[in-house]
Structure formats: C-alpha cells, structure tokens
Length: 211
Image (cartoon, rainbow, N blue to C red; front, side, top):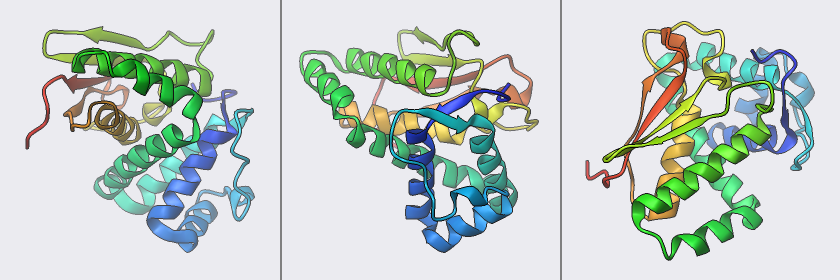
C-alpha cells in the first residue's frame, strides 16, 4: 500500500527534473495539471533527504503518464526516466557512488554488479519508507543472473495488467549495471504484481548484452 508512506524530497525532485529534461517545462506543467498536482508547478521540492513527499503523489504522477501516453509510450518514458533518475542520483550522491566505484576496481564483474545492487536496495528501502512496514527487497544470485524481488514497489501497487509495468525500476537497474561495469546487461521484469504475482521480479543477466 502507498497510503501513508513517504518518500524523500530528492526522489520527487529527480523525477520531475528528469521528466522536464525529456519533455520540457510545458510538458511537465501539463502533466501536473492533469494529475491535480499543481502544487509542484514551478515549485519542485528541495533536493534533500527529508521524507516529506507522499508516495501517493509519485504514484499519481506515474498513473497520469500512463493515461496520457498509453502503456507503450509510457513504458518507454518510464525507462528513460529510470535511467536518467539513476544517473542524477549517482551524480548527486558522491558519498555513496565514489566508494562503490573504488571498491569495484578490485572485484570481478559479477561481484561489482552484486555490490551495486545491494547498495541500490539499501537506498530504495530507505528512500521509499520500507522498513519496518514491508518485507525487505530480496537479491538472489544464480550462475547466470541475479533475481531482484520486491513486494512493495509503488509502480505495480493496485494495478492490473497483462504485461509488466515497472519500467522506472527497470530503467534504474539498466543504468546502474552499465555504470558499474561499463557494459550493458539485459534487465527484464519476469514477474509483476500487476499481473497477479506476489512480487515484482527482475532478471539481471551477468553476461554482457551484445544485442
């Protein structure tokens, strides 16, 4: 459930900044008007870690993107927003990203990926108000892939779909794997709560994506 949950100002700031970079200030204003989120027009939240943003606002913004752009168009935009949001987050948090990069110099590619995924999970659970209200995100390592399992991600909350809907998270994971390894790795949402599964599950391949 998103009711009562909060995320930090940084998350909403990055979301709005990213959407604005992609579709422009006028586009953001139109979306915020459509979503009845006029309080954010020309008034992005401060870029800090205070937990002040109702997660329902973020979900409403996401729902409006779906309604305005359709599933196909919204998914492409979601992935772009996810990738850009992850890039901005990495740049804005050098106290987190620099130690990961330094530690990764001594690690194999799969271990680099695991370290980055573990730090990503820490940040998601902190910034999206998981603990102690929801099960922790699970990371399973197999011979050829990682499985990232989340039972409380907001994108699939209360939705019904025949296809996966968590493009934002997919985009973030894609960017982070490329950032830490220097290569693209295939990221695929193989289960989604919107499809009736108990969790959103992403399969992240260890081998480099050559397609």
